[in-house]
Image (cartoon, rainbow, N blue to C red; front, side, top):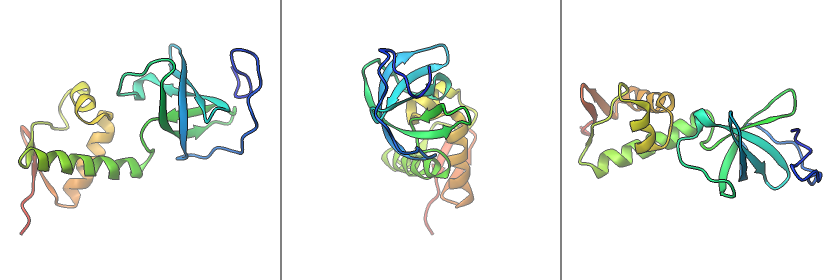
Length: 154
């Protein structure tokens, strides 16, 4: 299915070019072997790859998403988190908030199973590792054998 056709055969409204990182409104319209087919801003279709979705989705659900990539074949790849370092910054804040809520320590490491990380933070293990790496480099956290500890301010 191309960007210009919907299942019912009707052509969508014209849309200016999409760009990577653009926030868009998504309507989950179908599921395939690869993931979730979504209508973007009511005009085009794109794909949320199932291995990049860390929350339950249902057909008919409306959700905010982002343009991950507009491919050379004009198909659009989507994601639910901001792509790139903007996602890392948002996740870093989420990790810091969770640490503060839990008394400065959480029993999660970069060695945890991906499902634990997805359940706790709604992101992939790879994204989580980037975020804790960033926090560690900024000397905001201490990486311990059994978890992450908030570094005390001096």
